[in-house]
Image (cartoon, rainbow, N blue to C red):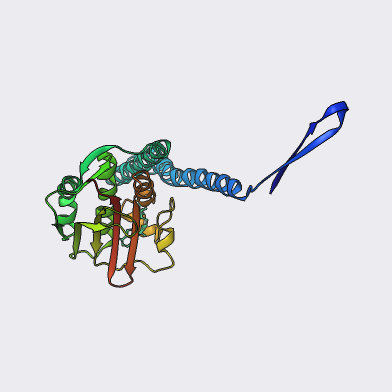
Length: 265
Ligand code: ADP
């Protein structure tokens, strides 16, 4: 606790009032610690591919100078590492842009049916590569919310891409769009659920999945081209839409990620 004491002088220099302001600084310290951790993590994540790139440059200038086969192989790896750095920087920039706008409520009517249809088209080739059957179940002709189209596309791209990547290869990924009455109060919520039938997630990890750089299996995430920022971005965008992200998983049976946002009308 931080205390600030001021005195207010009365007549003839006498102290009439003493004002004591007590402030709980634990929350501020926690935020500061998170910021420090975030910078340290981000630097580490960027340094890893950079160190690998530098290592290959040295090998190419030295021992592998005249080895054409090695050169081709190394250049492929270098390209992959550079792409990874580029994805990481894009995600970091997205996060800071969304945070900057956190207090601005998106205000355009958006039909989630159209957004999800667009995402499914974009990810159809990835699903096909992994032998995953991607299905969409639209329960209504339109499902409108107030939103930012590009951000909502980002949300469902991340969720569907994760379901394809971490779900069972050769399995299925189902997207359901429906309207449900709000738990409290009037009106309805638009609910979009992305479900896979892969290994799922152990309960202890579930609450931490939306932390920046949190991954259940770092090696697996890297191998699949992940940055560890996808779900953090999803959480921030959903929060800006005054919505909720609900994660449910039964280990061994699969995972379901639901986005709930107030429905228009
Ligand atoms: P990444 O770039 O690692 O995919 P995300 O923030 O998108 O980062 O996801 C964080 C972690 O959550 C992943 O590394 C993975 O361990 C876990 N995860 C996300 N989606 C799923 C899923 N559908 N099934 C199992 N694990 C998942």
